[in-house]
Length: 167
Ligand code: DHK
Image: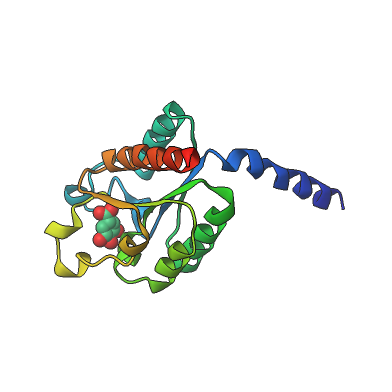
């Protein structure tokens, strides 16, 4: 019972947090950044990317909820969560970018603006990476700039959120 009361209290929190929360969702294998194919993905770790996002978002008056999963269903659940708990969403879906209709459907159901990010330039790589299912639901796509792309995405998203608020 005490736990129930506590969670009811906590449920109030996102209402204030949500107005300025940006979800940054990372898909499969991005937990390996830093050691994974550094010639393609660079040497920054996922923690480094999180730090970049935190810094940039804070400077613009936002907070970042930064997550990574190797599991498609978990990513779908998080996208659904963003419908109510975030004011914008950045997604690097990793390889699910090129395969996941489930993520596309979740993103299409998302009413907050979405920016798609990739560390590498997917268009200079293998042909199977040229198609993105995420792009159809995204306001824009940033790729090829490594970790800087995440900061650029936050900037773009902050501008889109402000524009939407201004009506
Ligand atoms: C990350 C991956 O894991 C790949 O599967 C994508 C993307 C590209 C990136 O560049 O961040 O094809």
